[in-house]
Length: 393
Ligand SMILES: Nc1ncnc2c1ncn2[C@@H]1O[C@H](COP(=O)(O)OP(=O)(O)OP(=O)(O)O)[C@@H](O)[C@H]1O
Ligand SMILES: [Mg+2]
Image (cartoon, rainbow, N blue to C red; front, side, top):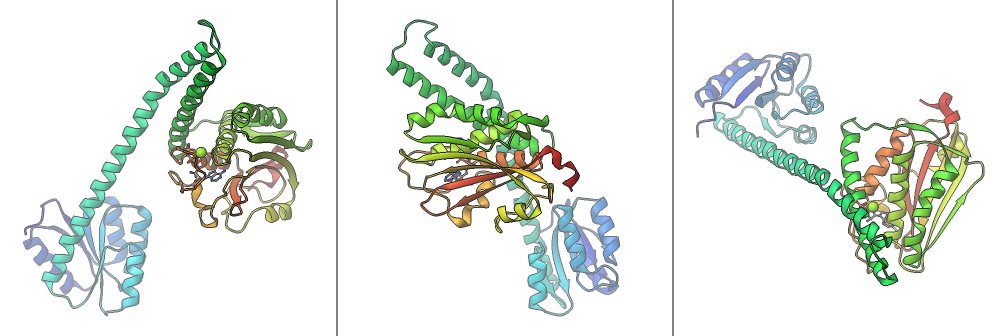
């Protein structure tokens, strides 16, 4: 099969006879080949011209060796498929190459037909990879566009239902009120989901705009918790808030923090059966040791968390089914949900906690989950106190 003319191949080998033989053979097969006789020249060529389909990369070369070039290419995140060539068959080396992102590995001396087959396979894999990513991107863009466009009409629907529920358009009995409230709650859940999705994207693109400032903790946390008093009562769940008087200030963006605590309380309600309890506790902790004692070993510490100083520790715990230990870190990844058997339909998109993590880390804080099987879950937030600025990294 003759190669597509567009497939560009870079042959990187310090042995000119091998490089020339490969070049002549592959040119005959219809590929557009170029040569590099050392690692740094190859890197320059690959970084400047991103359109190489495949690079045939010798492992042992003077200067930059093949594995170093491979690692740099992976860091660069390009699409070029890398086939490693080694002078001595060595399984460990082959494994190391594959682990570092090589597409294939071949030992010298090799038959030219063999390398041709591998190149064809690498080209096909690369095309599939690019196509898959394109489709994924298209799907995500479509979801984002749809979500964005759905939000305004949905908010209008919720507003109209609320006007009816309030009795502004005529008398409404208690049963009707309850149904209308349930429609409002469901609509609001979708709005939160859309906001989470859109803001996660903004965080990732570095386009989120936050007004991080010192806020009255009692007022803010109390107000958010209040919004959950009615649904908690409706579900037969006891919601208590316990704020230490010394936790007077938190340094956050009010709207983002409201959404964070809202997501955590929403989850607690969703995953706690009737008769359960949800508790919001706020404590003040100080010093590096205190911080170290609080953070469990499995939680990875974000780079912006100050090393010392004082923190507000906010915990939202519930008496639901809890979270399996091996999911505690993963649940903060987008779209991560696991099945539980609480007998209630939970829904959701698996975006709430991903949003919480990005928002809390943008306040130079940290969030993690704790859980004991069957004993409920706790979500812990550490927020540096504003007087900490000297302790910030
Ligand atoms: N309090 C909790 N108790 C038990 N499991 C929880 C709790 N909070 C979160 N989880 C688990 O973590 C998963 C991810 O939570 P997250 O808030 O990101 O998504 P979601 O609530 O499923 O959907 P969304 O927030 O997008 O509506 C949940 O699906 C659930 O499996
Ligand atoms: Mg959620």
